[in-house]
Amino acid sequence: MTLLTIANSLSELPEYRQVLANLIARDLKVKYQSKALGFAWSLLAPAAMLAILYTIFRQAFRIPMPDYWAFLIAGILPFQYMSEAILNGAQSIRSSAALIRKVYVPMEILVISGITVRTIEFVMQMLLAVALLFVLHRTGGTFVDMPGVLAPHVPNAHVHFDPLKTLIVLPGAIALSYMFVLGVSLPLSAWCVIYQDLDHIITIVMRVLFYGTPVFWGLFLFHGAWWVQWMALNPIADLLALYRGPLYWGSWPFNEATGGGATVAWGIATFFAVGSLVVGYVLFNRSKRILAEVV
Amino acid sequence: MTAPEHDNPTLPSSIPTPPPTARGEPAIVCRDVWKQYYFYAHRPRRLKEAVVQFVTRRTPPAKDAPVWALQDFNLSVNRGETVGIVGHNGAGKSTLLKLLSRILVPTKGSVKINGRLSAIIELGAGFHADLSGRENVFLAASFLGLNRRTTQGLYDRIVEFAELAEHMETPVKYFSSGMHARLGFAIAVSVDPDVLLIDEVLAVGDARFQPKCIEAIKRFQHDGKAILFVSHSMEQVKNLCQRVIWLKNGKIMSEGDAVATVTEYLEHYWPGSQKKK
Image (cartoon, one colour):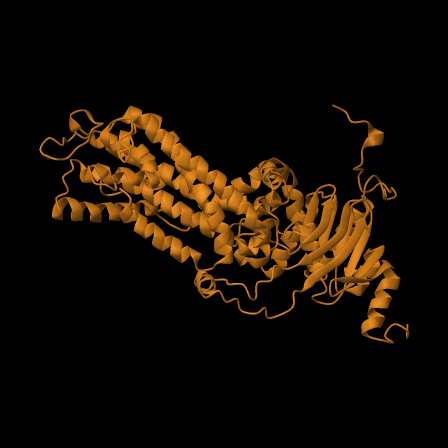
């Protein structure tokens, strides 16, 4: 496996634009034409999760955060997107077994299509979430009545939704999440063909990550704990920070784990997104030769 | 922009022209191709097993000796030539077509196709059951390298050839297997490939559709396309091919004139069957 094979694989992808477009259209059609409620279905799961987490942590445990529901929206939607897109992508080659045994398609196309379908759904969800935050026009809660809670990058610890910053940050945040998800999915999709129980393990890892990543809790709640800085090594946490800045804090993104500002937040997220894509594509190319015969 | 008339290779099929054989480099070239399937029987297919094997450092013995599906295979097919592949099940015929269509990668050696390839490994491969016939035409055509606009231009011809005009809005899961196959064949022959690979697909279709398929293949021959034809129907092979390759256990047993090689093949398995004639 050389750099040349990778360059060759990459160079043939543009020829398959039409295939990619058709596969995405196919999946969207099949997914939504059979359901009367269509897109609304995809909102059901995150809405239910939001309701549950809000009830438990806000009402029962009295988590000390103003507008906790907005904090949840900014965390759950991107997290669910990343974890589901990784699972979709990982299963994409195996679920197209009938196709790739009979027709030549670069396997990357299948992974890209599987992830893109979920990304389109996510973009629509985010637009809806932004509209919701805008309409409800949060008065903006403050942390003032919660001593000991620190939000160093937020002036006066006053949280609010910033529509302008959101619209500027969101495209970049989604693009980096997409790259990260694609990079992780590519090798997983190949290994899922070889190891048939791998997707169960991915599901379990994602569930653990849901609790281990600041999705429904904030790192600032543990300010000063020795492990907080290590959270910077969790790429999903770094990507979530991008969304949370403008959507919840009303600020440019900042990286709570390292205490860095916008530059650090974007830098770390970009590092993980580009890194996973490069490493993922190299690993993928190492095993893709045999996929059509073992799938 | 007007193309010079003498330089136009796609003449209307009604004008009788001799097939332009051996023009330029061959359309299909296989050089020393070996194919061994990644032998999975003794490899762990579950992470659980892989972990156990790794921890115990014990690898179960290989159950069988590795099988070469294709050995030291050389082939060159020129434009305008139709080559038949005969042999029993497991001889390597389908492996060969899958190597040529890039679905599989050769273990050793190289495969080269010059021009656009259309492989009919299975009719209607790539169809999605829930989509309509119309949507599937566009999907399947894109696998053959056609964009939306080109497919739109060919659409009426495909529907007419498949004789499915009144069923194109029906999901293909409600198609009969004959309708499915007709649509698949119509798409595969409508894309104007330079190289056509056909794997045992003419068995489908009723008595009225089969002659149309043969007709389509003859038109390709006439237009100087390279065709590789796998079939168990010796009559069809003798009828359509100039040259025949007989494969057995991944090796070429014999190669040459169609009638002679088919006779040799039949004589090998059914001694005396050919002498009576």
